Length: 97
Figure 1: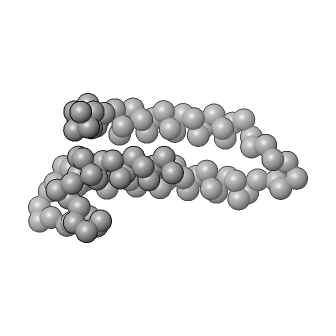
Figure 2: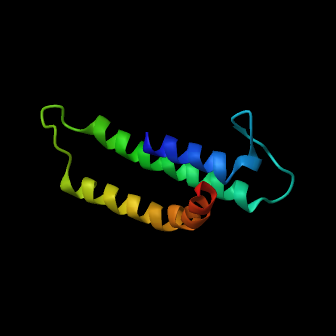
């Protein structure tokens, strides 16, 4: 839910010129915004996929996940925030205010 909300905010305020009818427009040539959007959203899918894979492999008799995995998830989210989210924070803040 978090990523869906984040993506809807970005599409509505920062990437609005790249979205038509809820779909990403393809452009001719290079677009830094389009490339940033694609890689950012792809990283969301990667993070979710890693969690889903671990949960699906977890022991059904034990509801706990390994501490190493939880730590890795936290580090991955931190890395994601540093690489992607910090890059648009100021621009999104300005667009919302």
